[in-house]
Image (cartoon, rainbow, N blue to C red):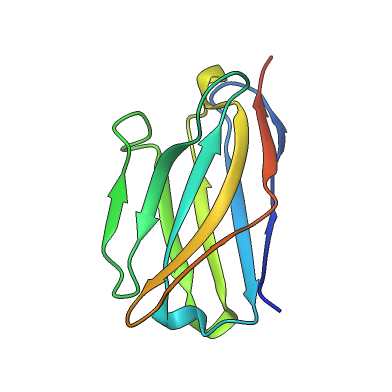
Length: 118
C-alpha cells in the first residue's frame, strides 16, 4: 500500500520559516519525480515546486528564491523548506510523487495546513 505522509505544517508569522516533510512508503521513492502543490481556500490547486528523480528542481514564480525543494532517497523522504513566508502562502500543501514509464503512477498525500498570519 502506497502512503505519502506530510508533516511540518502549522501557524507561523509573516517572515517566518517552516520545513515540510513527505515520508513515502510502498514505492521505490528514488525512481519517482516528486512535487509540492498547494491549495488556498476557494482556489485551485497549484504547483509550488518539483524535483525530478535526478535532482532537477523547478519552482513557481511566486515561491522562487524563498522555497527550496529537496529529497533524501535513503530516507524515502522529500522536503520543502519555506522561508520568508507571506500571508498569501497560506494553503494546504500536498506532496505528490509521479512515475512515467510503461505505466504511469501518480500518488498524493493527505495534505498539511500552513497558515501565515500575525
